[in-house]
Length: 490
Ligand code: ADP
Image (tube, rainbow, N blue to C red; front, side, top):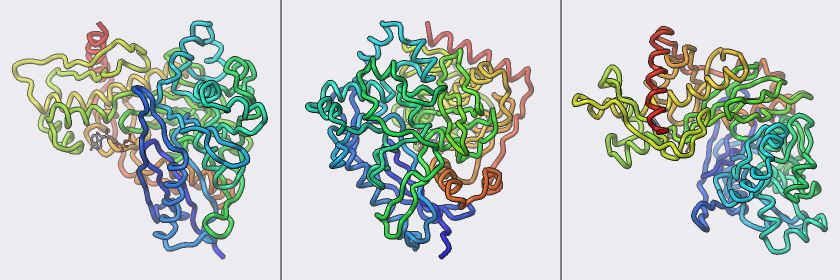
């Protein structure tokens, strides 16, 4: 029987999604379901691992039904997931010991401060590619071992499994305890050069190696599931941002993507070379595929699409996010106005937690459209800062920027991005790039698609935005943005 479909599970921070793709990379069925966010204390964020599993399983069943297919029609299943979020469970029963500690959770900030005070920042950065931060999984595991009754004893008896969400889902699907390089590289426990858990960091955090999953290629058969009927190979695991890079077919060195969501996530493929950053960017594993590991540089903008939510919900200058485009288009430029949305400080390349937001350049003639346009442009300026840092770190010029995420629908924003970068901005037809990446990786593993080149043929462009301003104007615009940034930091 022909196996004409790939099933991608996209386990996100606020919802679980399952998508059935066909051989042309088209979406046949797409079902998502939100689940509860748990905030036990200020700054703490948890998810119920059983709720994650329940919604993921339900959406997968629903997507298969909606597509009108059966398990026997599915060549492979791929998983992509919210990264860093950490689950601990009992190896024999599969029972979680505690809620999943979500990437956003700040409860391990003090542990991180101690590590920094011990002077471990450089060592951790060299080995893991990451900055010491509560964001990553390692200190969350330490917290569970130190605070969940019985966890350490269970670990000592070899009965405890730690994992990121990919591992948790794989365990529920197949009973196998494994992860992939891209997810392992977000734990702050994984040596991205040796491709092994780092004993020195494991010792310092008291995390026993036996609790950790086996680390494998992102594209490859991890196990098989019969939960949907006939056996389906689980043939890919990949963290969401890296999966989006793959879904954008950014396979060659320096190909880059930006996902414009609440925040923006920029990833640049650096090929088989892990590039250390001088600008506070993260070095991460993009994926393991065909017997080799490829790396990426990653930088994020804290307030991306969120500045548009702020215009809508707090300033009430627009009624919908999409209206930001029509309002901004009422004026030819911002009239010298800049919005710096440093609401929670500034990320790369500034790393200034004390910076705060401001609107500069106001005159008697400044109106609503100028402010809306400036807020929209701030997303492009901040992204340009991150991309500029990547270009400095690699000494390479990126050929084009591939874009996805909710705010990439905004044509004015995309045009401004192309102008500020001086390179083409390319938007694909598939919005679900993250899931597409997992589908691609799973399909490659089982020969559903013959090669990466064949995927490049499948990927379809929606629109290309070419730069319309010259270098001199671009430099002048970036200079004025820098002046606004300077004021936000005073
Ligand atoms: P997330 O996955 O982070 O929830 P999405 O990819 O769904 O984000 O994108 C939603 C974000 O994009 C919101 O912050 C919203 O303000 C912004 N957004 C959505 N549509 C537009 C638009 N047409 N123009 C500008 N911003 C938009």
